[in-house]
Length: 82
Image (cartoon, rainbow, N blue to C red; front, side, top):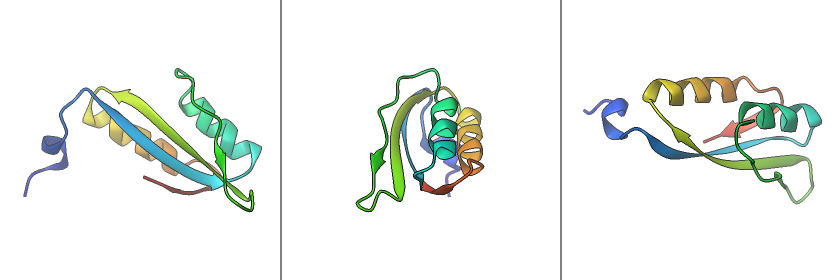
């Protein structure tokens, strides 16, 4: 079975979908992580309890991709991410 590193050619554009509580802490944390690019305002859920960010960034290496996923997983008030 191929290693994940072999399946993706770097550099590449990668899109992250990040969902969390509609809290300032969550929104600020996501914006800080992607401070180098202008990300759109998050979309609110129907009941406005949650927000979601869709962010596309250029990832230069597999190691950078792993680091981003690890950092995202540690964001306070996060519910899920893909």
